[in-house]
Figure: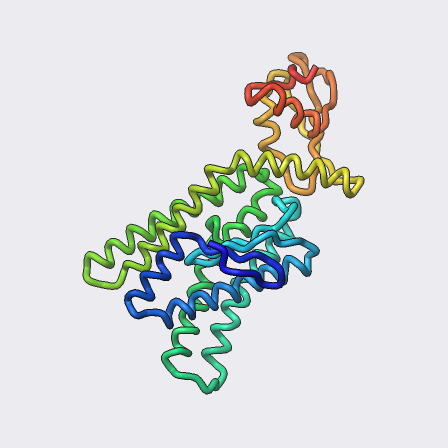
Length: 287
């Protein structure tokens, strides 16, 4: 559902989150949901401002119960440093607002102040956890991708998200069973697991977009740092591309059974061959 625009950026609300909002209103908790929604918008605005500072363009913002996702155009893990800055902007502003509401002598209803502190503190701390699609998961991917490649780093961060979601559901179920308030943990866990599974499901498409984007980045900039790997002729191209790293262009030195160099191929050639001949294509198919 489209909520409106902030500085020309479309803001959307996840359907399940909308259902949660309506449930809160029905239970007489309209004030609580307004505080949550306002805190989420502030959190995502921080992401958007940092993205603009980094020279990136935001396509739209999707809101979830645990935060949101600022979808940035032409930005698929090419610069881990930028991804870290953009990801951390949200938690930093949420924790800062929690500190402001807690320490400054503001003339507000104590109940409202307490709620603002708790919501922003939870939003900031939760999003620092190293699990996709949380902000901490994007930081984890940015830290891992230079060493493990973008695809493997995304898979690891998404798996962390699924694991965390499962633990939150189990913990919430236990708290509910012993007559404590655990329903919120269950709801957050379900959302987190669903969103992390979605990241895993669309990983192949995101990875192919990442590869094509890097090819375009080379054409736009005119240069990229390179990284060489040595591979046998019978190696699967998709396995080689799995090690592709942000900001580094891959050059593959091909050797035969006698370990003699028989050619050097570029990342672009590997991508074209993979698109043309499918996932079973090997380096021999480049000839």
